[in-house]
Image (cartoon, rainbow, N blue to C red):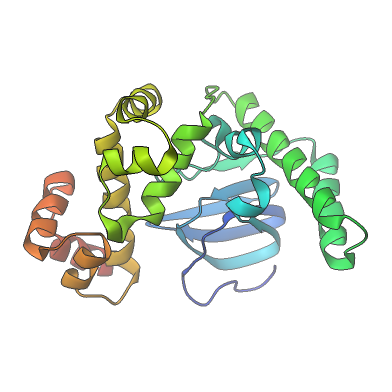
Length: 255
C-alpha cells in the first residue's frame, strides 16, 4: 500500500495489522491519529474505524476474521495475548525487530494467498500464527506486562459487540456462552477489575462514540442501534459515563 491510502474512515469486522516496512505512514484509528515509522506495526481490533491517511514508503496490511483464524481456544487466546488486539480501544504501535524474519513471513503469506497452492489456507493460518507470536515477543521485549487472557472472557467480549441491538443481560450472555453469571463476573474482575455488567457498559460507550463520530445517524437512531428503547435514557447513560451529552460529544468531534 502506497500513496494517499483510504479516502474515508472504514470499518470491517476483521482483525488487522498495518506494518510499515519503509518510510512512514499516518493512520487514524477511532479518535486517535498514529504516526508509523519504518519497522513499526499497528494493531486494529475488529469493529474499530480506521483510515490510512497517507503513506510515504510501503505499508503492508494483514487482516483476518475470527471465524477463519480461531479453530480452538489457543487461537483466540493468541489474538488477544498481552492485549494485542484490545476491545477497549487500547490500540498501540509496536516496534518490530528481527526484520528479515518478519518480512519473510509477510512475503510468504502474500505468495500463499496469491498462488493458492494445495492446502494454502492451512499454510496461511500457520504463518499468521507465527506473525502473532513474533509481534507478541516484540511487545514483551519493549517492557509490556505479560497478560494471558481466557478464551471464555474473549468470547464474552465478542458476544457483547455482536449483540448491541439486543440489549442482552449478563444472564443472557451466560446462557449464550454456556456458562454462569458468576463465572463471567469472575473473569471480568480478573481481566478488567470490573463486573461483567460494567464491561458491557464500557464496550457500549465505545461503540456509541464510534457511531456518534463516524455515522450520519440521529441520536435516536444510535440509541435504538445500541438496544435503548428510550433515547432520553441513552443520553443520560452516555453523559453519566463520559461527562458529555451525545450531542456535545458529536459537536466536539466535528470541531
